[in-house]
Length: 271
Ligand SMILES: NC(=O)c1ccc[n+]([C@@H]2O[C@H](COP(=O)([O-])OP(=O)(O)OC[C@H]3O[C@@H](n4cnc5c(N)ncnc54)[C@H](O)[C@@H]3O)[C@@H](O)[C@H]2O)c1
Image 1: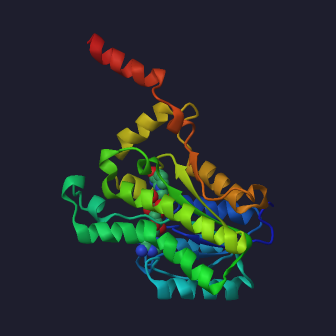
Image 2: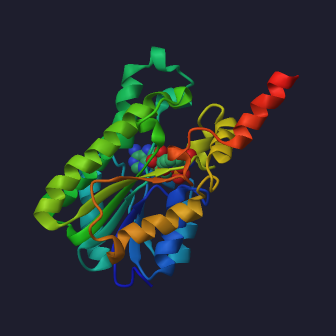
Image 3: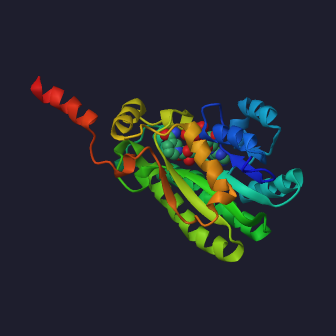
């Protein structure tokens, strides 16, 4: 019960595959109470109601790009939960360029702005709204989910790579200001490829999931394991961790090559 008595806001639970869905289940099991939120359009699919019932949570819809809707989210959440918010999960990503299969060299710039707004600037908006409303408790914890394409090139990840680089930078920069002001910590978790709606939307996802699996000494980190890590970061056991991008990838980010991958190519050259 490491989150006993803690109040949170969890974004991004679309269906039972969503990383945020697993985070909500684990946070509930660890004693937290929280509000679930997602874009109103995602809400129409109705799945989130099942999660709300299972975790005894209320749902407050909010488009994470709208300051008004985020303001409503933070004020309603404090009302519902009965006090300031101790943890926030930012689990939001979307690229219209990826959805429409547009290559990186020919990006549609209106879509690009949308990718950045939804996937990165929304973290700044959430933090800024919370900061101005003084909605987060001292030693509160904000976690956003990222991907290693922020540091290295993954051609098929196109403009989401730029969005993740911005997301990680915002976590660092806001982490400084919020840390100074209220001891609130802000971190990103750089997660392995994970089979979710957002993940499967990326071209060639299955191949790249398998390559990452063969490169990671521990294998790809599952969404359940990611949820455990999020809960640890929300808890008081990680109070001095802030402004970090933390790899949660089974060792992938520090592996150059694996024997398994070498063997695949040995087979090819022998043929
Ligand atoms: N799946 C992977 O391989 C992987 C790997 C590393 C990081 N991540 C990141 O994890 C996070 C969660 O993604 P997921 O894989 O669980 O997929 P998902 O599709 O289940 O979650 C993405 C969520 O973003 C929400 N969203 C989109 N636009 C929004 C808006 N305007 N306002 C509020 N919410 C909005 C969607 O409704 C959805 O719930 C994303 O940031 C994603 O980039 C995913």
